[in-house]
Length: 182
Length: 228
Image 1: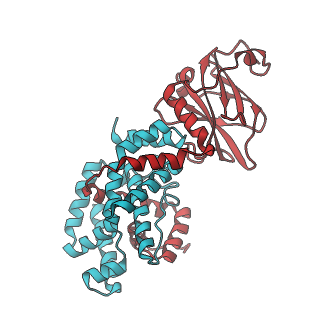
Image 2: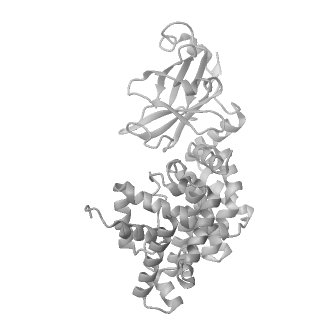
């Protein structure tokens, strides 16, 4: 069985309160998710705390993950990343949007061609498309995703006005999407 | 906002949302639209998949063991969750913690033995505290599953949904229980072979049943099928 199917099956069993499945899911995914959280927070103590929060959410929301949209690893990574970013922003007490996708967007996402693609091929494609962007602009998108940087953070980092940063980033998104849909 | 918005704008907006770059107000507006617009959900999902690839570069890091312990105590250490642990045990032990079958009750039950012949398999689908009890009798020849709810009921505005759990496979819905305590389900062809060794479980769902095809609410009761 492919990884994707296995993790999907574990989530479905966790959704009906199967603790053995949850244990298995934890042992297979916690190192990856801890890595993701650590990358955002860069602090072990708060990362451990957030990881705990993440698995509590996964257990409670497993029934809301369905095999009709996101890859299960994408869902797990997104839950972990968003929890870490929420924490980061609470720590900074910076007003900004919660990215609470596990509650909203994942209720019933439509299937996407991307979701159906083989992960390896998809990975190669996104790397290639990032390479087509100007180095700084690719870096800005990466930092927004991986470190949870905001427009304000990015404009300070690259020393450009916020509006310029926003324009850069929006253009980069369109270029990326254009490249990814080729 | 109900006009067909420019697709490029939505592509960018979905990307900004996936990156967490929108302000709280913008994110709230976007989320409200997500609920109503499948196309926007597809745009968002595509970005989520794309960006998740970036996480492939992040090295995994094994968390310390105490994290797991804390998760378990948060999730399972209160009485409210005892049903979960009970169910977990049932799933692992294959009947270890399953309530004893009340065979005599089945034999004496008129409804369950209604129709031609005695059932081939039975199950008592019960909550740990007895607040919900459903007796099930399965006639393999006709794929007929006869149910009798003896205790408990759906909460107002909610429904009880019956699930078949076959080993590691995802739970399969066998149907939503009617208000009437008596029900007869025909088990779909694809699930018949699994019935004799399955666990049957009841979950709390929105009226009309789970909208997703998988359990979405609490598991209220469960029981192992066994031959009579």
